[in-house]
Amino acid sequence: MVNRSEPGDHIFHRARKDHWPRISHGRGCYLFDMEGRAYLDACAGVHVVGIGHGVEEIADAMAEQARKVAFAYGQFITRPQIDLARKIAGMAPEGMGRVFFVSGGSEATEAAMKIARKYHIETGNPSKYQVVSCWQSWHGNTIGALSMSGRSAWRKDYTPYLLDFPHISQHSADELERVIRQVGAEYISAFIVEPVLGTSSAGLTPPDDYFSTVRDICDRYGILLIVDEVVTGYGRTGVNFGIDHWGVVPDLMATGKGLSSGYTPIAATIARDEIYEAIYESAPAFVHGHTYGGNPLSCATALAVQEYVESHGLIRRCAEMGEVILEQLQSLTDLSIVRAVRGRGLLCGVEFAADKERGAPFDPSLGVTGRVVQEAFERGVLIMPGAPGPLDGVNGDHVAISPPYTVTEDEVGRIARVLREAVEAVERTL
Ligand SMILES: Cc1ncc(COP(=O)(O)O)c(C=O)c1O
Image (cartoon, rainbow, N blue to C red; front, side):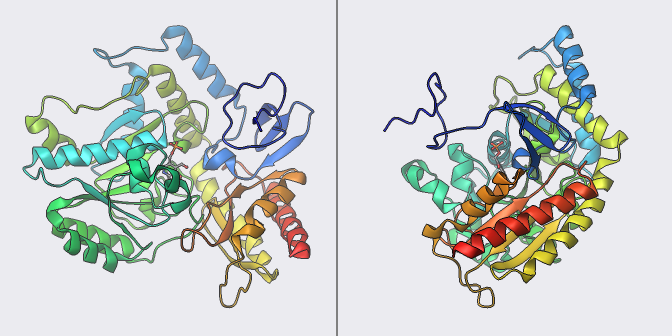
């Protein structure tokens, strides 16, 4: 059967579906479809939209830059690129002062992988190339990023293309050290990890001593620490970057999503000054880059977004509303299938289980995650399905809630109410 949802639809869709609602516009925390139906966007698209939809100031900044110059390449840099890099360096942990612009999160993690490799080549360790990551972690869909990712369900079809990189259990510093010894530190270039999990298990957070231990292990074995801040960066967890909760300085950070709040495709890899200096000490160039990396229109847009975040105190607001939403969502744990609720700032997750005391998962064929998301959708609230198989690559059901930082208390109340109704509706069918 050809998957053409409607006559005249030539889109190569990401899934088979009979009808795709068409969005006409957005305002604040709401999206509106062509029939005028409103959806409360409780997942900010895919943890992207921090400042809300349809902000006039951003549209104005985009138009102004487009009139000046939208694209310049190669031999040039531009004012928006310089200003945005300065702004990002000012938000990043101390000493992380070099910003490499790309167009999306996968490009950002893959650039981090290549920067790490280049650093080792230039500092006399050319045998280092493998990147260790965690099972079920997510770092993106391009082949390098997918090789680093541990999301079994999304790797499967492409296994023959993937690089042979080691994976360890989530949040196990012991296993990191063990795998380094087993493989040999001379082959390991970097360890990549999300500070607070996004779609793999939204809101799941490592223990307090995790990052200082990991930093120490990386330093002892000459391995770079890459923190994937694509979801958590630019305020999503109530601080500038997720790693700020642990006060640890990584070597590289991959960022995206919240950088432009969805107003334009842009992402950035942020490097410690010493990494940058070590590379350019001897190398004439870092041979990597994409056509749209650092284009002035995207940079001006992201700069306007970050200035808006700052002038409206939205990161502080995100932290405050994060506490409100977590408290409201915690009340769902009285439901028979809700096993856990967790979160940092406005990045929250709700986990379901067939037997919540023992943590026994549902049979994946029941499709519990998708059904909860659908029930909420029918009630006009958009929540995000968690990635399949958080427990072992196959089992586990969960959803993510991550509204814009501008979400109001009333909207938070509605999200929690609708989620309760949605879960209850699914419970009745199990
Ligand atoms: C933690 C994390 N890293 C990287 C990516 C890849 O980003 P993109 O989809 O923009 O390529 C994602 C996307 O969801 C992500 O959640």
